[in-house]
Image (cartoon, rainbow, N blue to C red):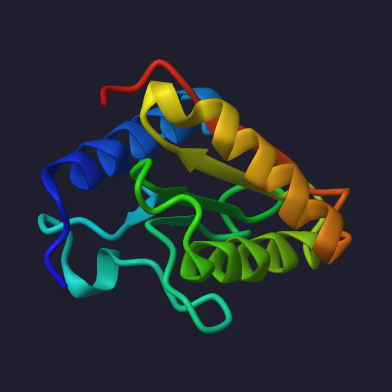
Amino acid sequence: MAESLLHMQLVDALVAWITSSLLKGDGGSVLADQPCCSRDGKPPRVGRFVPDVYVPKSVCRGLIIGEAKTARDLESPHTIEQLGEFLRACQDHEDSFFVLATPWYATRLAKALIRDVVSRTRCENVTSFVIDQLPG
């Protein structure tokens, strides 16, 4: 399925935020599902899904999994299943992070959705971020 321009911009923002905020500027090990990345540079499957961004445990103390969602995609059953898989994967590894990028006007919904999925999956130990101030 071809990704929308907005989704690609959100993935770019996700990579930039993870690189600067969690990896201290070293983005060399960030695997991203972007058209410019080779097959070797793409994230692996996590459960049944492939995240938009993945940083392996060997790079930092835990996993970093990032997902970009447009406002329209946030409340879909597919997204809820993805978030559950990604949060459970992070829960299995100490010091892991889950990062969600969404347009600025959907950040409150995104935070509420993550709280709900964390509660359902009992992944309270996962540190999650919703990146705001992104284009819409």
